[in-house]
Amino acid sequence: MTTEHAWMLELPVPKHDRTTETAFAAALRSRDARLLPADVPRWHFLEWLVGQGWLLHGSNHPDITRFEPRTPVDLSPDEFSKRTAVFAASDGVWAMMYALTDRARVRRILNMALRVRQENRWSEQRYFLSLAPHDHAVTEGIDLLRHGSVYVLSSAGFERMPPYEWPALGEVMEPHWASPSAVAPLMRVDVSPTDFLLPVRMHDAGRVDRLCQSDPWGFPWLESASGRSGN
Image 1 (tube, rainbow, N blue to C red):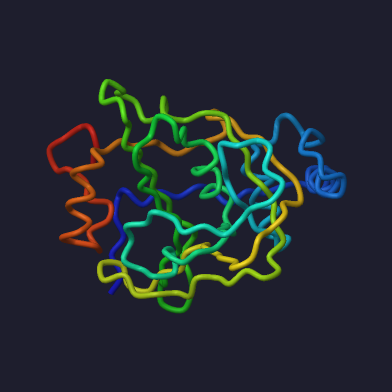
Image 2 (image 1 turned 90 degrees about the vertical axis):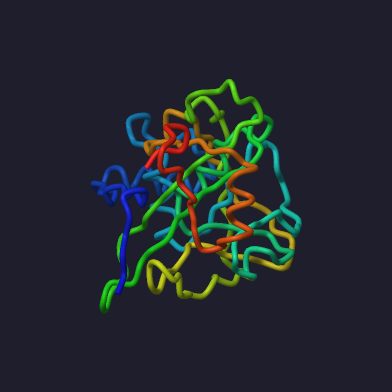
């Protein structure tokens, strides 16, 4: 039986008229995000791109011309996230988490994007984002975001992480992809903290690292009596 939690957040599925989709197609064809309508949220365009079969990679760096495989620092219990690869997402909001997180000010990122198996179908995407600051004087998670870039990648050569069993949730599927080879991006979409609509929690990196070692499936290891992580 699947149990979902209050910390698993959801956004409405974007809906676009023909004019907006025509503008999206023109921006993709020209490889120029500046052609996007100013009044349309950037994550709507990113989700449209995913629907067209493209993958996304978020970064603080605005000038990447080639992604090389790397081995990430990853504390999750799965092996897929620990391989040496170029990683990408088939979800715009998840890619934005990586693009917007200020790596210079954040010690550790705790995030999630997944769908939960509900009888014969998958749920809508569920999200979570919490950041561990280097400076403990920071009191608001949103202050740990900065301008960033989401790169659009071809899905050729990428493998999707297979669905797996999460003890507290049942069968889940992440929009997580990996390629063992270097990848050149097709285009770049610049995003800002105002483009991100979900709340940004904060946590203590040392505390969560310890709990992760003792209880790998206890994500997101929320504190029951602290406003710092919240419930």
